[in-house]
Image (tube, rainbow, N blue to C red; front, side, top):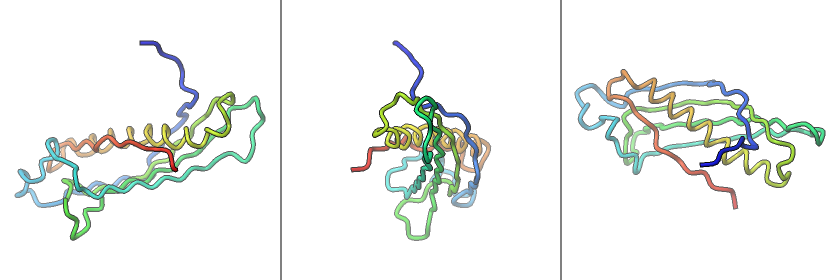
Length: 148
């Protein structure tokens, strides 16, 4: 398999909010065992905001800041409750190759950037729940599509 650097490079990622809470008491471990949990029907919310550069010289790589907020609120009345309620946020800074077509820049950062940040969030949730009541939970893999 051939490999090359992506035109989008993640420069820094920080978590600005991390909250994980077990959804029920320990007497319900069988119903909420996270390693085998099916996320179908769970309310999962993802909010994304992108800050773009005002202007950058043509020979400099533009920087973008992407903020991602992910939550599984487990609100009363939800049809399916996940093993853990999640509320987390992260910010990531990306550098984009200046040769990349300018009309596709924001789309690339939104789709690929969010995928990279969510991958880090998945790992963080798994680590935070590894020794928790209902076992380690790995968030489902999400697919982000261009806005139409």
